[in-house]
Length: 302
Length: 337
Image 1 (tube, rainbow over the protein chains, first blue to last red):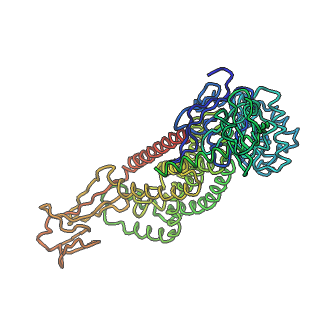
Image 2 (cartoon, rainbow over the protein chains, first blue to last red):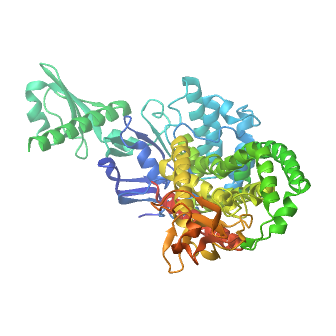
């Protein structure tokens, strides 16, 4: 493991009863990245985040945050800020009391920073957080997570339940806060659109497996959409490209492919287009879903 | 952690203090009036005169009459006393069961367990502090109810008997701590407040019943007293004994009456009490029966001097169970994933 790794997971698996919520999960998130963890509901996003913050114990493999087991205790936890799904807070506590609580539960704690953030956002710190709006509560949870001065910030669907304006404000606050530091961020969402502009690292989860992970620019550079006549599809590909997803009309084929290395020359009648992040994610999600269904079908046939 | 526990449970504590104050508002006046009547009617002096010896002379008719009058007057309060037996389980359901279960239900365990405090420390601090609160409530309750019920329990069947024993001394404190531990344990395992509360009630009642009716009488072997049927003395029913059995045994060691007492004077029956028949026919006049010559009444009992032995043994059992439950809860909490 290199020193520039914030989160590394290897062969990670978590099982509930006989169902694997996450399996064979391996990825490496370098320090300083803003990573989007994308996948449909039930893909294993929450499980992965809970394993990373030590709330869950893996059944297979391991997770390491800055080289340490997150279940190892206080020191490991001190590096991680976590905002859980639906931002659970003690609802009868006021924001000010929660800040005070954080100070008592954490060795490093920047209460002034939390208060400054909350006042900048006009969030009443004296009122019970259960009576705040969802957007305000999410901001309180974020301010608390940031007050820990974490080196890795994990957010589980922080904006899923917010209205569009609150989403925008939340992402703005988050980006503003982490741009001042070298905090690594991993945030999950089932909607890519919210994260697309903010993130420079992508992890796609589908049916308990990692379909894709890597630097966003890198991923975009390594994929193209190829469009050409359907009858010459086989010869055009010629084993050079890995087709991730194909859609075909009677005469034309549209293929999202992974490049072998540099962009090779294309066959007659074919052209290549750059892909955007949304196409890429959609292609891998569709492919993942088909592949799994196929495998299951084959197993059933045996 | 101390501040968090205080902040989370201060309302609960306030409500508990209000409830205790209401209880005190009922207990103090009724208790004072009972204590006064107990002394003023002469019952206290009578029972003191009867002493804790096993037999007494015949002039105790007054005691019986006074005790009857007293217990008839305060009959309703005796039922209140029985209700106090249930007090510990309330502490268990309101302080124990929600302690961890509520964190799970509201998802706040995901907040508090991802701060810079290990789960073990969180659990030890919370369980310890709530345990101290339960201890204080238990002591207050045990002391208050023990004082209140003393006149009711010092006559009649005595303070060693079922239910009377349970609201005095130190066992109410042990019951309270056990109920809280049971609530915490079930909260950790069910992770739901209401099921944890329900099973706490059921579990508490079950364990208490088994210990009370099955285990307790075996803590120590019973003491025994033999009183010839021809004696003019009587067995002292004001000594506060917990009586296991009364029987009449012949001079040759044969059981004549399995469940009863007999007194004879000049070949005639002066007193015959049998409850349950045991299939024995005592005949028209057992005192004239040759088989009854030299027979004696045999009483097996636990004397009131063993009250504290029994209290500490029973408390020990419940405190050990409480410690075991808390231990399991902590192990489980650390493994939960």
